[in-house]
Image 1 (cartoon, rainbow, N blue to C red):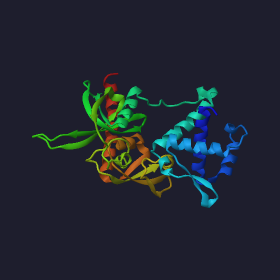
Image 2 (tube, rainbow, N blue to C red):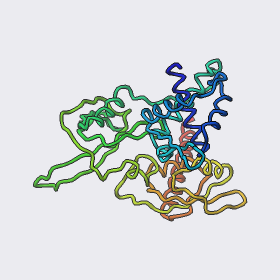
Image 3 (tube, rainbow, N blue to C red):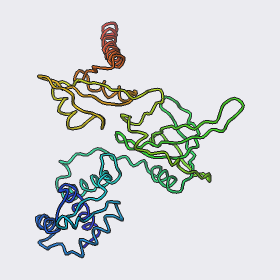
Image 4 (cartoon, rainbow, N blue to C red):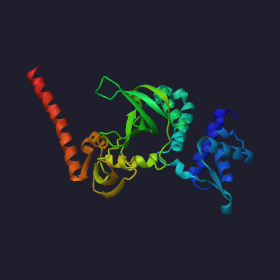
Length: 319
């Protein structure tokens, strides 16, 4: 079997077992025979065993066997297939890639969004994380022409809205003016102008967990002054269906329904990127509580409306 065909078989096998929850080898084989990959040939038990080993080595996904329940197979560590895990992202990406690669004749009718690669910088960050070394970065923030020279420990990376972000950890020694401190900064890879490895080694704090760090966030903004709150949102029309299918945050739950609306509650940090998302939905969503956030979104909508009024006046003055 060619390497590409093996990848397809691995992905198909994981998806089949994950969807079934529990499944025998005979049932796997029946479903396998219904695919074009099988070419009408059964999966030998020895091939299945090799696939299991390869899947664990490549993806860290363990296929277990419940001998007490009719030798049924299951994903032993299915938590790694959670929504924001690397394994889930890889499997989803490779699954879509396999489907599209088999449909090149339709390439003019399959429209995709660009995948962020960020050149060599993404590879360098991951390499620095593996080696446990600090990186030196020339970083230009929006609204400034002069880049900042930064030196930090790359703790983790996160993909959000087609951009890669680095969470950098900084340590500042005590000085006569300032006490010792440890703090984090978030940086977008598309604003990095230059990056170099340093010889300074570091170890990630054993109490740090990347998933937990961003748990209460909408995206990548983590402001220590913004505490998580219970936020209630009313979604009107079709927006209520979109929110059910694509939750804004993993804490989201539906708490009520009306004739043309649904109410949702989230426990999240109401940071500026979350406010921007609410604004982007226009009149389709309304913040019910807390009142301060409802007032903020209302005022931002009024400011936007005033911009249009101002433009109309300028057009009348200067035809």
